[in-house]
Image (tube, rainbow, N blue to C red; front, side, top):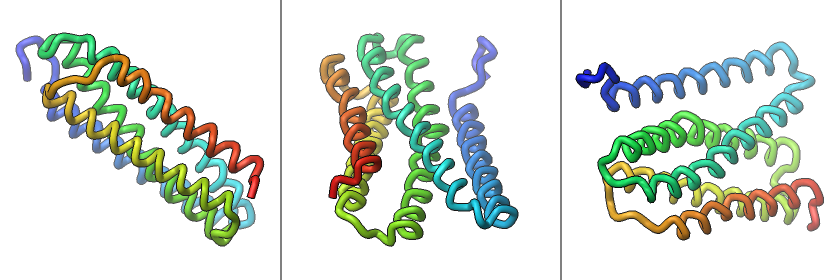
Length: 181
């Protein structure tokens, strides 16, 4: 324990990771229970949980680069910088990573069960989700770089990257709703 009675970051990170795994386990239990108790409605529940997971993932993808913008202005080693490190790490590990995994699991289930991987729009959507996953991994690398106090990019750089998930999200939603090809 630090002298100011705050828990050490390693312990807080371990607790956050444990909570994320517990949340995933609870989610899988709810999904399995739904399959057993409501098999006729299972597709609707999967679709609903998929949308919830996508919303959670997108919230993180839209918020994390904003944290990078503010973090870029914080002096290295300052209390503010250390707070941003913790916020970025927890957002990535506790919200974004589980939400991305659930999005992929349920999305692939829906692509197979409902669409049998047929349709050009579906292939384009999966490609866009793969691009969104690459952005997620790129942001994950940035979280590690900020945590290691590596040289920082400018706020302008992160403002541009802040728009990338939005553009991909717009393309994905248009593909899903309109199914143009």
